[in-house]
Image (cartoon, rainbow, N blue to C red; front, side, top):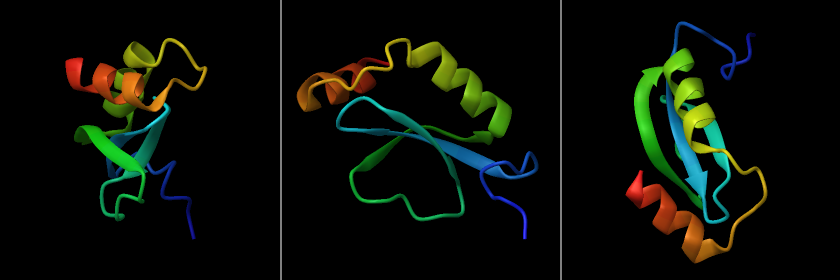
Length: 73
């Protein structure tokens, strides 16, 4: 069985948590608690490009600041 997180033929979402951390997520899978979709349903490459453009500071952020930043886009 192949890893659904590495399948280039699938559609993906980009998720963000309360600390401003991003995750690439297969579109067919349920979004886990504590995560919010912020981009997609798109190709894996488009989602990775979005994460690269948005997640410039890898340090966890305070909960309120991270969600506010994701809404500003």
